[in-house]
Image (cartoon, rainbow, N blue to C red; front, side, top):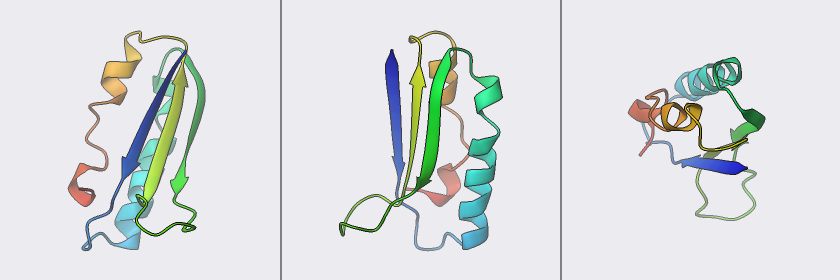
Amino acid sequence: MIRHVVVFAWVPEATDQQKQQVADELRKLPPLMTGLRAYHFGPDAGIIDGNFDFAVVADFDDAGPTLPTATTRPTARPWTR
């Protein structure tokens, strides 16, 4: 099993609408990923200062063809750093 973890820090200019758009696009991905076992994403809980703002965790059966595609999607890039 491969666990792929991605964390985002929003740029100060990112609007709530843009952040929601990222979540909406991420929600569309699971049917496109073969070998996906589990998929979770959401905002940081805000418990510890200095954490990233948003995270995605995806568990795959192996490092098959889907993992490289999942790591290069530009969905959030304009609004993250």
